[in-house]
Image (tube, rainbow, N blue to C red; front, side, top):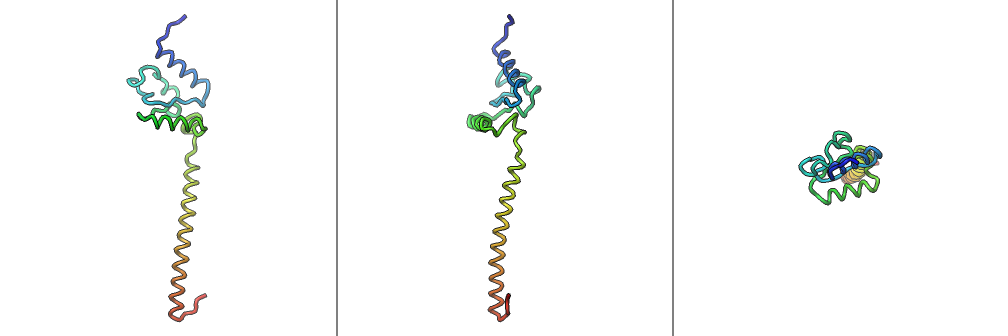
Length: 126
């Protein structure tokens, strides 16, 4: 039987989980820093990349929010699988439509005022 330190056991277990399932990610405070978590995550970033090994700031709410997002399916196999561009396009389209409506309303007000002005001066306006 081989003998392993607690840190080495955790390291091997994390690697096995990450190898077996591409949807597994590791989120935590200082997971990429050897002085913060010791050797429990040593070499993991090199093998699996920053897409699946996510170092968070020292903020419990950040880690909690990321974990909730991951569990809801927003994060699958790392953050890069989430296509932010589609969401950005959706909100940009909504913004453009709103701006267009506002412009049309302002232009309509301007046109009505201009027509009223012309009519007040005796011009025939269609």
